[in-house]
Amino acid sequence: MHRLPEKGIAWEALERQMQAAKAQDVDWVHGRAAVYIHYAGEDVLEVAKKAYLMFFSENGLGLRAFHSLATFEREVVGMGLSLLNGGNDGRGAMTTGGTESIFLAVKAARDWAHRTRPVAGTPEILLARTAHPAFDKAAHFLGLGTVRVPVGPDFTADVAAMRRAVTPRTVMVVGSAPAYPHGVVDPITDLAALAAEANLWMHVDACVGGYIAPFARKLGAPIADFDFAVPGVTSISADLHKYGYTAKGASTLFFRDVDAFGFMAYDFDNWPRGRYLTNTLVGTRAGGAIAAAWAVMNYLGEAGYLRVTERILATRRAYEDGLVRLGLKVWGRPELGILAYGSERHDIQAIGERLASKGWLVGYLTEPMGIHLMLNLTHEPVVDAYLADVAWAMETAGTVAGTARTATY
Image (cartoon, rainbow, N blue to C red; front, side):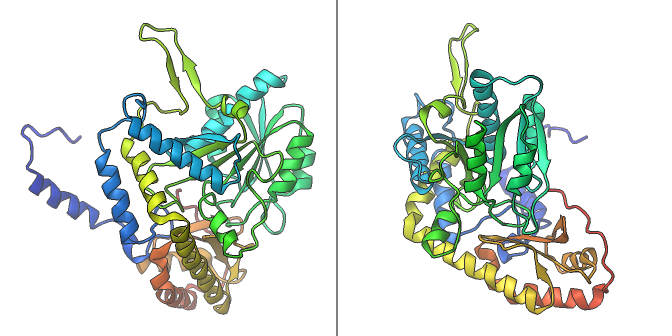
């Protein structure tokens, strides 16, 4: 048990302790972590830090006190909607991360169904096996069930199988853009058509892709429609602190119209303090995260996001090409910043363990066995070093396929 010190410790001593503790962390600055970090350059990081500190003490719960944060959030939401074809009727709010955005989308779908099409028994969410676990977490807390459907051979949602899985208890359909395991985009247009036919809430989980896919499309990447341009899409989650490159934690949840947006909020007034209304699950929100999102989006602008996206797509292609040259297989057809690779001959766990011995933080895929990468600009200069270490790992790992262990998310 670690006790509170009897006397305070000077900052200089604390700083030394913290630097020593940080020395044990993965060296993400030099591209050793292909998860958790989204980096678009030192200048962008500095803007986020300065903006965050300017509003370090302000509270996003109190927008009537902090008009600055209210303005920042409104404009961030507006910029996000414009990227995702939200139209004049679109609405949304900032949240603290993708899990909260997904939680609130599930809450909105549940409340919508309760009001407009109540079901007998436990309402259910229909989603592909590759959809994010946050949907199951939300269902657990909100009293819903989930029905996960196997994906097709390209690892995208199998629309025909999902259609067969619809029951009278289904209230929500989920598609991913992209799905986190393989980095592929589900057929959102077909899923949304299915949802519309059955009068279901259609949510697109673009937590990873929401702030990179629009720019990839502008650069010519053949990414199918996935946003509010698709009829039938009701809500979209998109993380600012991923490929928006803003400070953690910041995400956005968008709705097609005012009516759908109305199901996001929690409204309560049965206590002495009066009305308590929040659009979010949390009450207090870090003002710094809201301010940093606004600052980074304005600092980069469309030109900046296009420039960074172009480099990330090129980096992903360099990894893909190099891995294929080594005789490995890239699973599916990755379209943005995520890729997963494996082999039908080599022991992937052994390869991963050898990469870890070289200082790489390894994330595993289990279906099929593989190694998972989510790339940013820190990976651009280390492509050759990573591929060289993969080649060395393959030489020493053996050719008997093993069972990839699951790395905690």
